Amino acid sequence: METSAAVPAAPTSRVNLSFAALAPAVFVLLWSTGFIASKYGLPYAEPFTYLSIRFILAGGLLLGIALVTRASWPKTRAEWLHIGISGVLLHGVYLSGVFHAIHLGLPAGIASLIVNLSPVLTSIFAQILLKERVVTRQWLGLALGLIGVSLVIGEKLFLTGAAAGGFPALALIPAVIGLLGTALGTIYQKRHSAGMNIATGTIIQYLGGGLITGVGMFLFETRAVQWTPSFIFAMSWQVLVLSIGAIWLLMVLIRQNSASRLSSLFYLVPPLTALEAYLLFNEQLGWVAIVGMAIVVVGVILVVRPAKPQPAPGA
Image 1 (spheres, rainbow, N blue to C red):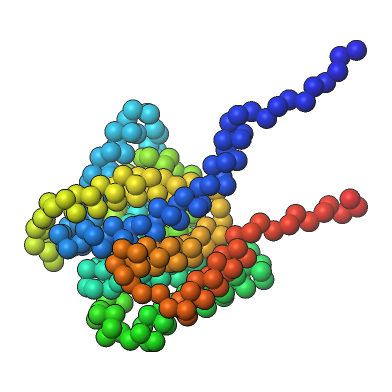
Image 2: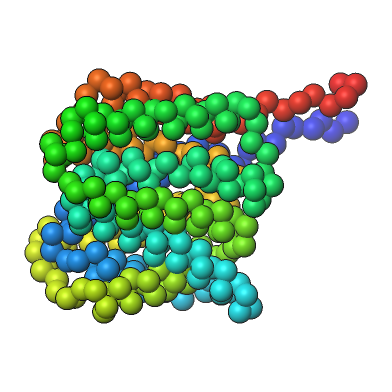
C-alpha cells in the first residue's frame, strides 16, 4: 500500500513569505531617505526642474525594463487615463508639494511629519469612496498615530519656536498640498488601477506627474541646474532607489493591502526621517518628539495588525 508523503513547501513560497514580511519595512526605510536626498539636491536645481529631470531619467530606465521584459501596456484609453491621474496625484502633486516646502526652507523632518499624516485622510476617504470597513482597533491606532505626529510637530513648531526652526510659515502650505495629493492618489490608485503592470504603469504615472512639473518648470522657474557631485548623488539616489525601487514596492503594497492599512505604514516614516535629519543636519529631537514617535509606532501596530479570523458557526 502506498503511503502519502508530505510535500515540502516550494522554495518560491518561502521567498514570497519573506518578501511579504520584509517589503513594508524596506519600503518605509527607503521612503524616509527621500526627504533627506531632496534636501541635499534642491540647492542646485529648482523644485519643478529637479522633479522633471527625475521623471525623465526614471521613466527612461523603466521603459528599457518594460521593453526587455515585454511588459504589458494598458489596452484602453480609460486605463491610460486612470493611471495618469493617479500619477498626477501620487507624483506630481505629492512630490511637488514636498520639494517646494523644503525649497522654501521647511526642515526635512517637519515636511515628512506633515505629509505622513496621510493615513488619517486616506482611512476617511477609504470609508467614503471604497466602502472599506475600518474596525474600532484601527480607528484607535489612527488616532494614536495622529496624536503622536502632532506631538512631534508641536514640539518643533511651538516648544522650540518657528523662528528657531528658521522657516517661513508659507512653507507649510505646499506640504499640506502634498499631503492631500498622496492621500487622494492612494485611494484613486486602489480604486481604478490597482491591477496595472508595475513597470508600464509607473511610466504612465511619471508622464502624469511630469505634466505638472513640466508646465511649472517652464512657467515659474529658470530651469538652471548645477551639476555638482552632491546634486548627481542626490538625483541618482532618488532615481534608482526611490523612483524605481521604492515606487515598485509601493505599487506592490497598494495591490496587496487595503488603502487604509497601506497608508498607515507611512506613520513609520517620520521617526526615521527625523532620526536621519538629526544625524545628518543636526535637527534636534526633544523628549516630547521621542514620546510622540513611540505613540506613532503603537498606532501603526494597531492599524496594520491583521484581524483574528472568526471561527465558522458550529466549528
